[in-house]
Length: 123
Image 1 (spheres, one colour):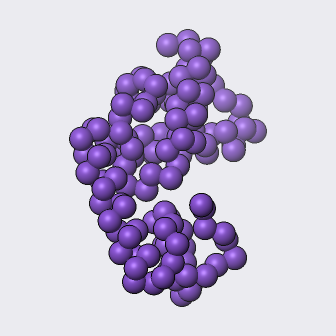
Image 2 (cartoon, rainbow, N blue to C red; image 1 turned 180 degrees about the vertical axis):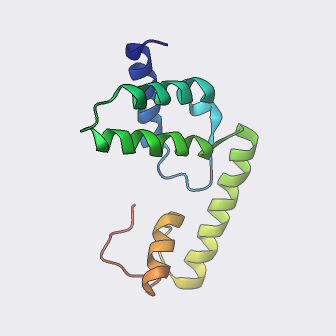
């Protein structure tokens, strides 16, 4: 794979990551612009060619590599999506909170304040 192809693949994958950032429990593999192995190869190549001073880019690439684990077979993603909706409904009923993604709930739980925060919950 040449560096320009790797860049194209990584950029396409980055756009998908932005689109699925709200999916806490798993995203369907069918949303990936390329097969996981191809994306992994592109990320590895990109890590090999970035300049040492581009630490932020390197960190983003490493996180993107780990985020590939969130992409699961579509059938499993459908199940986890239903589970997430059920869980958030229970949290909403129990605590009287808005319907927030799990990552917000975890932040609030750690701070000891389940329904209020300086962060606004997404609509």
